[in-house]
Length: 131
Image (tube, rainbow, N blue to C red; front, side, top):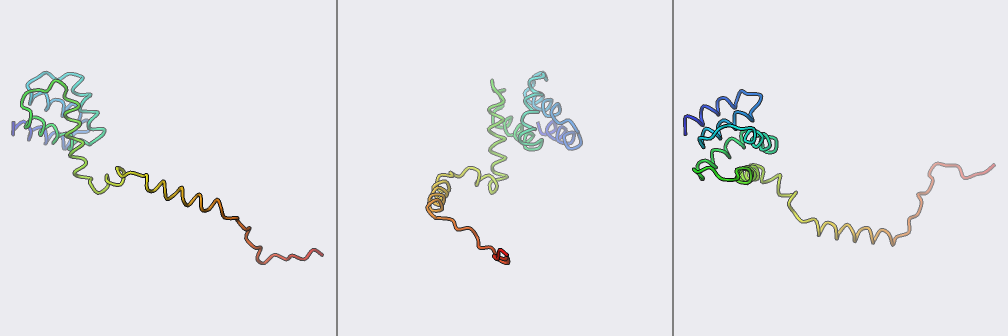
């Protein structure tokens, strides 16, 4: 397995089309034939998580599940997502926070501002004489 992973890693670094390479690695590690569905699976994961995150997720999946799972996409997607969140934990946290408190504060500000009567600004430097 180590030689296979190293071989495909070297190919992955220089290729412009990583989908078929990762699909070939996945299929060779599970000893199955490469089909269009595996290539599409790898391309979807690469588009979302990147080539190297997908590569190491495949290695993790093969290491933790030596038998080919019946549905590979949910399994690989979960591993890729976990790896991505670990790598980007600081940037992902704000997007996962609840906005309820922010919305309540914003609603209070809107309500407080709607009660105030707005005064138009005084014209400065304009001549009020009508001659």
